[in-house]
Image (tube, rainbow, N blue to C red; front, side, top):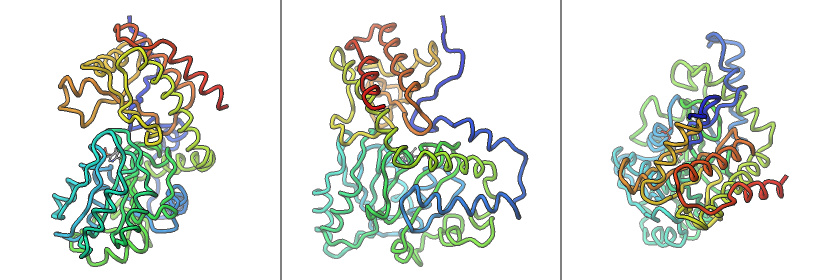
Length: 399
Ligand SMILES: *Cc1c(COP(=O)(O)O)cnc(C)c1O
């Protein structure tokens, strides 16, 4: 029997759950793009997007997904042949590095593996070795969505400063903005990217590049600037079409306005605390299950675990078995493994991910936890008893 009817729950690390008010805000006829409401709405988003990022710098808006943001940010930051140092902690770090290489950058990768955060001491040493200051840009991922590691961005900035290195510091916060604490200016980040479909709770299709005045000055005259990605006019538009170099993403803007209002009404501190508490409810269940079976956190140290996504391993093949069963029988879809072997291989099938970003609350998390326990039982996957009770206790202690 299938118990999957009713609202399906897509619990993957993006696209995330879209709130009903966001959907409703988008359900309208095409608006006037020359004057009126949409123009005011777009102007009004700019200060709020800066507040969410924690910056008084600039922001450029794009019609794009995260991959486009990698290119948008790089074409503004570097020229062909420039040296870029990429701190890699999973698939998404490799992704940004690959784009840099294909754009003609001289890419050096500092790989910290799939189960650990960036080690600031190693970065500091690499930067100190660059006595000629050839490295123009240092890149890091705040939360690598493949491994679910959460890097300590402030400590990476400290390493750059300790090396006395002038490189521009760019951070991919696509998986973490609106979920995990992020403070662009306080943490000394020069360039930051985030897309609409994760913590920002809006359908995929919009992306943002925040940049400091320092990054702007350093990037002037770069030879990779192309008309579409150039952040100069986008950050200082006079007319609405200049924000997007063409027709604006009309309905996305209405949705985003609603989502941003929801985040600011809840309060950033509360949004971050909610994500942390709900993540800890998952962690309590996972730890308990792991005591009687093979379920393991990919990131052992809670201090470096994302509050927006969890990557878990469950013995050969069982990750995919559990995922498929949950979709078919209980109406829940968890995330596939990424970067742990080829898709479809036994190694890859041993991993899966839970997305817990954006518009989620306690009963949604408890629903997934109960569903996972049901799946373990139905599929005879060994696990410790009492995961949902552990999560319930954690949540009860926090409200
Ligand atoms: C999702 C994600 C991306 C890629 O975004 P797409 O919209 O799928 O292109 C890049 N980096 C991180 C950290 C992500 O979580």
